[in-house]
Image (cartoon, rainbow, N blue to C red; front, side, top):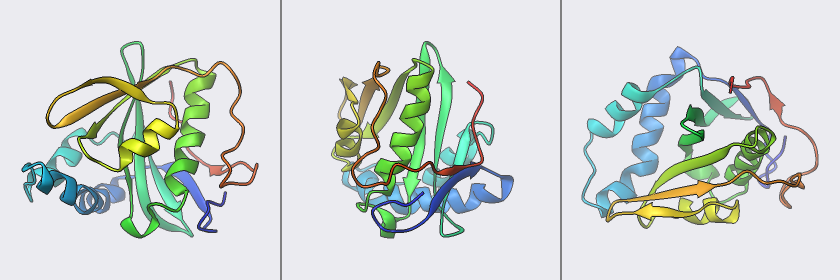
Amino acid sequence: MRAETGARWLLRPAAPRDVEVIAELRATVMRADLERLGRFDEHRVRQRLRDSFSMHYTSAIEVDHALAGCVTVRPAGDGQWLEHFYLAPHLQGQGLGSAVLHTLLARTDAQRATVRLNVLQGSPARRLYERHGFTLESEDPIDVLMVRRAATQPHPPPPEEPPTKPRDTHTPDP
């Protein structure tokens, strides 16, 4: 599939070799927000990913055959929990995050699943989630908990992507 960048992307199952690369990506992507909130710790930012990484529910995002990000969608209570959605900084703001999120939400909608996520206060990612139907559920000085109920109508492709399917080699079990 192509995002607005023109880059070809796909979701594939995460592999053990991805953990450290994704831990580094997380540290890079989250650094500014965590520093702004007074919460950045060089070791902890990586260790939290290592401790909660689940290959079973995590997809690696590849762009032009290179690891460019990841996303986890796992069962949680009455729905799904979306977490660890990271994209390399040079690919942010170009439609890739929207294309990936659109693909994932089409799956959760097919399951009629409510999706929840947590985003840091002040993070630009919140606007992405709001554009895709997430709304505020609760918040504190650090975290914003957002929720999205399953859509009842099929999703048209977002404007920045052609109506083709991504090469998806990974579909986590519900």
